[in-house]
Length: 227
Image (cartoon, rainbow, N blue to C red; front, side, top):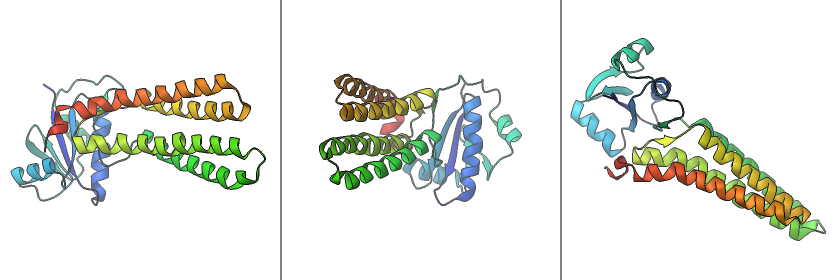
């Protein structure tokens, strides 16, 4: 039976991040059902009231309060018993700590915003102002808006629905396809090469499909309708 590990945290609780890092690392290696619950959410409040928890971070395993604070790693592993080793790159529960893929998506979105804004400002004096404007709009729409949505959605939606999301190679492939799509679209528009524009569009659509593959199970997960 897969152990159910419920970690109670809050955004304002500094030690909670340390506890989450510990349990996320264990969850990447061991088959546990890890749920990071904010005490401001319905499920978190219900668990706090049920068990009379007064301090966070608190770790509840199979309905029993086992740890308050950040547990020793050896004790945490002992508490989940003989949990099997986890197959790499499976779905993962998201907590208050931003995943690397989410952080990189938001950083890249900010960079693209700077590029698009600069192009729109400085490109107004160019003889090819139309091409500059079209390229800047691709960078703004795909680079800024889409990547910002990717980064925020993969972090926020799993938290709100208490559902895991697929991480690993698919998350990075999704971003790689979008970057490739942006570069190809901009190059195609600048050079007047239709084939590059087509390939850029295909890459961008493929990034959206990868995002859908990751997000749809989150939205359809049984836990998404709770609370």
